[in-house]
Image (cartoon, rainbow, N blue to C red; front, side, top):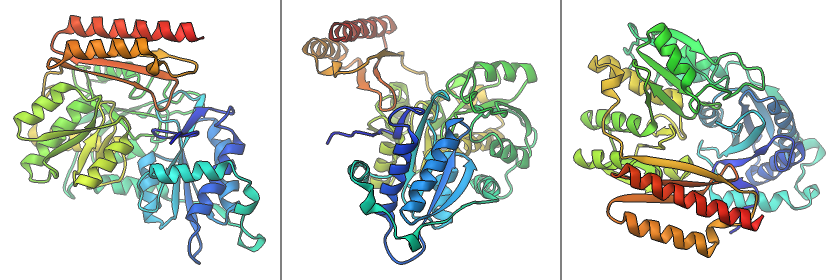
Length: 451
């Protein structure tokens, strides 16, 4: 099935350009409202957003669409993606919406959708939505007396703060820890520092002054340099970098070194294994997770189940096979004991709790394995399908043959940007660098020839 609007994480694009236009956002609201308008009860949707300038525009358009379809719209304002998933369940909503492009710059935006259970929608439901979007909307509208109402909901930040705190034992405290947190000028700029402070930490906050255009700008999990400098400056025990919608996290240790999602999953897996809390006999990660993580888990008698890139695919596998820990190298970490989607703050709390219990510095605690040399490069393309070119396919086949038994090769189109991602890993760094550079060159040449 060809997907026209949805990628690996909802609908995403450049703000005020197709498909991220108010017209499309309204149509999505109408289409989703029609699908979830079942039964005689008052139907409701919760709508959250991050701090992008275009969020105002898309929020109002979606409110118009949902109310036109007969749903009451509960407007949450800027709040993390995992909070929207949680509040969809807590408020007994029929559907939840997060308006965000996650780690992308402010010029982009996106629409993420959650069902009444707080999980992202299935591929099948997304295809139904795509079909309805392109139909005449007049047949999808509610009668005049059934048009929905809209209201802003107070106290949602407090609900999420308490939810996050309850993921730790009642007597847990972060007293004695100096924590630097970078909120990426995004959705968690209020709630994340509040959670840490209420748990007793000495909190140093940055990236907490959003202006609509500075989300993820030289800050947050995709640009941790500022946090690394801040950790040194204030002599913090740990640095926490969230992304724009706070569903992913990267840690900076007390030495200023970055710790990625693979290492964080290893720490949590080891901790939960010792406490007899780990389910499924291991964890779920994507094809991008480091081979070193897989070897480490094997040494602990645990398995690593790999999925396609995208936390939704991780969650689907977790649900189908009874895992309670999964995630991505990029820092999406899903702890299904506590939530239905990636939650950067809740994952960070698990690490902080482990730091307090062990007394170990973060540089020691969060270095569970030596990563296998891994290199990822992107090739931007403007159209076409370069991966279907025979020259590219032959180059990929040659590289896979060379790495057989000694490493891995993953080449895929991005689900959120017009990029081809080329990743290779193996014990021989020079070999990996050569293979990636050669493949990037082949793909770029094919792209240029087709232009």
